[in-house]
Length: 348
Ligand code: CP
Image (cartoon, rainbow, N blue to C red; front, side, top):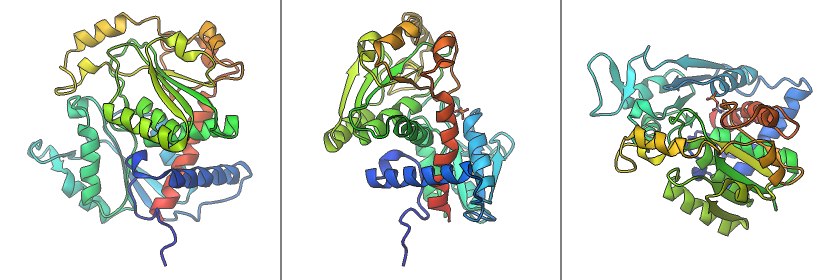
């Protein structure tokens, strides 16, 4: 009898999993975190298993947490640089002896290992919104082993898991927690939308009181916003969009300000591939920085969150990110525990 309903499944987006399943992943993550804290070996969970990791974009936390996680579970994580293999490409985007069709890469790696993890957003898909996520779905269509999203242009489901685990640890539960996901200024206009979209999806799925704050021009995916409304109706929280940073922060328990790209940077039909327009929107909103005065607008016991890396002096001041309300390194550590939970559940 198959008792683990996770076994063999892909982990491409939180929307593919039920609230109960996400609760199970969090439970397993907390158990693995406890075992590591007391030095209890758990390398019997994935012995001899291999995770292939394909990174089209840079990473510190994601690469190292997956790699360390596989070692701790008894397996091995193998790093693949798309420019050093034949770059996996979709049909119609192939170049002779430089690329290899995604369907062929997926089937080849399926014969050798136990899961494929992919990070892809932005330039590698010409800023075509959803293009990277579609490529991951194509990998999943052809692979006989689970495919894990390590951040695409729509979702960062592993970061979102780490975020809600951190909130659960700090507040004990999600009920009544006011969660504010806000845009913040950065000198780079090229950050994807995946982190804020996953953050608000998970927060509404957990039934928190959720506010999304951003200047005009930084709108997120309508489909994601509609899903957040549906989750908040189903799970008893609330969801609203606010265009005033200070107003949004009033009474917040979770303050999560980070930058993401403006709509014009995307290729049509979402945007116009006009970086000058995006730069103008960014320049007009340089005052969207999280500083000590802004933190005073939030609840006295509020926590400051950021997925990292952050642009210090632009998204946040040093005194806030290095101060007592900051939980950014708990978030970073929790990447390890939640990903180990996901891998333990889907790969065994
Ligand atoms: N938060 C996050 O995904 O970090 P990296 O880009 O370093 O992987």
